[in-house]
Image (cartoon, rainbow, N blue to C red; front, side):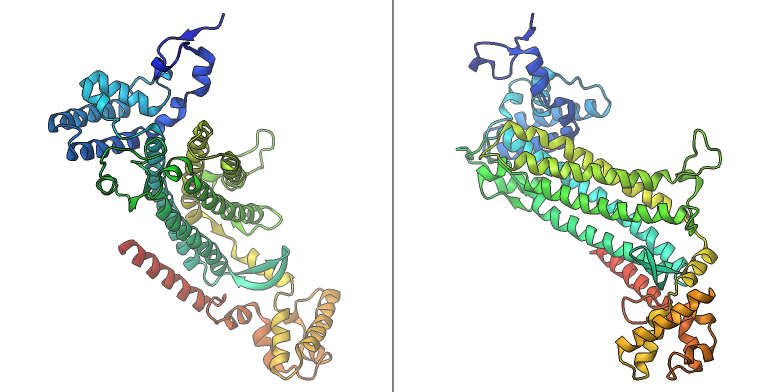
Length: 467
């Protein structure tokens, strides 16, 4: 026999009690309790505004403030009893408030609906999470700057198609990741602007006939302004989708970075050593040291992208205004935020302790004829057309392959056999050091240029922190 619950929310409308399974199935308190402090924050602002317009007395406001403060403490201490019968975080807090202070607790809901209440709570929640994520991004960027400065002179192969292309410095390579994370930070800033708009006052969908001061409430909650359209306010979640999209890009960047760390730590590359604290061993192979942190971050990127797809599909067929579908927006959002914070923290903790194996990097750059383009550029500066220079260098590389020597190890007479334009000064640009030093243009890999880029990045971050 199906069990039923007779304590149904808004039960006066219903002739039957809710089926027990349906009650569990439709309740959201199992996850939206995480927004309890945001819900209390919104209720405090709403109550202050209701008092200003004369709906609540000063005593009722004081009672609400006292009751909500007690509820907040109960939640923080883990003493608050969450009930599925009350469906969600909003009704659980309201029911407890009414138990504590009586009728004033029931008056708090005047002029609002759970529709605009939950939309406000989510925005307050995301606003806080965006700030935390930005802080973790900055930690990782500072770690990148520290290591890049330390490795500004370290020569390694730069790759295209995972084949040795041209020599670069490890510091320059790390600064590429810094730039990606800088754009991620900017995207979060931009996303924050659209999150920071207040839906409270939209009520269920049409606004309310009460003379609410929405600008006062927005100011109390730190929102930039109230929303413009009540239907849109309660029903749209594009701000949440945008957050998940930005999160997916951050995780995409971390995943690519992870892939490089995994490759570089392998015996085949042997470019870096990841500290033991961020690795694990094998249950059967005693020699193994597995780069678990970057591997797990790489895996979690799919999780975040999956949540983005989930949110897009959640919204794609919804008519205006609010629909129960939107209850499914919270768990993906919570997980996106948690995953971002944890992955960024792990990377920021790990990166400063990674050790570059300088000699291995240097020798790998020598093995791939990384200065071939430098020789072509040398011939062009001597007056040869680039396509002809390309052909000449190809012949020189062939000789190097046949004799197992780098271009810098060929002698002058051998090189002149391919072109009489080649003179003794060619060896200054055929060395790895000469190659990277010549790339002094802004954005280039020359060590001094990298140091300038690091200094500029530090200055920009300091200005943003002070701004």
